[in-house]
Image 1 (cartoon, helix red, strand yellow):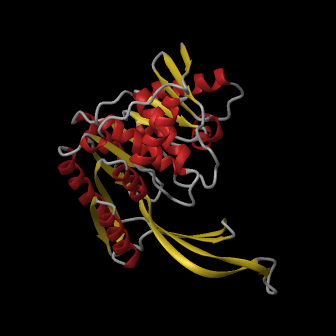
Image 2 (cartoon, one colour):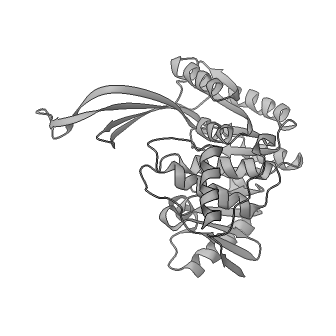
Image 3 (cartoon, helix red, strand yellow):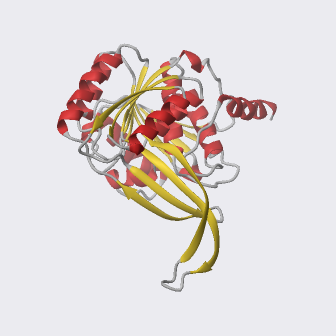
Length: 325
């Protein structure tokens, strides 16, 4: 096996404005309540947060789409929302981010909302509101997916386990039949439904849930490669937090050291990674360059609070520093 450590390799950034990316998956609205904590409640041993400002951001697959658009890709988002204020807010935020959103409304559900309470720059509490979409709406979404495939160069399937990707096996099959690279951000312990995808991007805990805990790099490589071969993947990209990333392909594994200058918040970092890799593969960049640029992007985004994005100016500035070194 060719085991390489290339953390100092120069990253080539192509013109990502040519990339046409289709993002499909579970969308949600991320709400943030920011406040000050000065005392403990007399009713229970919990802090009292005096809310000073609120913020709303697109989350889940919508955050993947926002990250793809942020690096310049022409981005289409396909998902399901409820007939409610949160769903309409996601549509508005997508429009503001230059995302072409196709959001099917299911009046029987409430749009998934994650409410985070933040005090002193620390997340104190998260409250989730969610229900699974109906089969009828999901069938309509599959028909739209087939129509949208022709106009994209790469497909990203963002699975947050909320029920929006019930037909994911069929979507992978259709995407590959159309000659498109299909990237999947997986969820859960059953990866069989992702068989045939081009690349999977699990984090450490997600991969351990499927292959078990490893006790060495050699053990990890064996488990990852066995899973990759079993699912018929071209590659498996493992994101490893402070240990960087590892790209497993037939006959090789490539490691990249972490690039975070200061870790502030890791939420949404996986969205950034798969968005950047998807945009790069859409313009026929190599997987090595796609991983390196995604690694740099992740290092930037974890230094920001909450579900955040990285833009081309930040990436070019960082790659310029690397070339100078």
